[in-house]
Image (cartoon, rainbow, N blue to C red; front, side, top):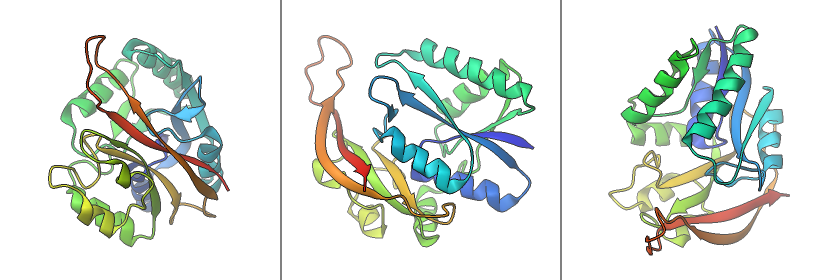
Length: 230
């Protein structure tokens, strides 16, 4: 079974990829990542392109980079993904894997988009308890940095921390252990899927607000930490 894996660079992607490799019945042909064309960073996670490329090299799977403009909309994203996946189908790839856990509407969206071009989705972590996922991930020896946090749920002190059991214990009760509702995002720097660890240093923290419309005066947004090559 030939698969393209939708790779975010974060912990859920890493564990889902680990699980697929563990089954030994899937051939993972490519990692596919969406980046911001202007800043050359992974969408939402804010991680630099060169660090993403280090991950792919250490994992040993070819990387496909898809670029979206800074203010791309859903139609832009759908068009880019459709064109990319149709090209992969020519190579015999008919399955697309994701690290999603429990967001039903997101799963339905992915499945509907893939069905339009004749592909199917795979969700290795689907409906597993997120506390169990987090603990298994840590116990397997993965090392992960919190790259950004939603200021609606977490304060600045959480960004830049290591995703470990102390981090999980410090999360407010209304925040999911895996950040599945968008409370935080991560970047994996070491673990059983890597041949060598990713060399990095932590840079400055930056806050960016994302108003819903022109009348939105809230200060909700995301704290990011810049991760650089060591």
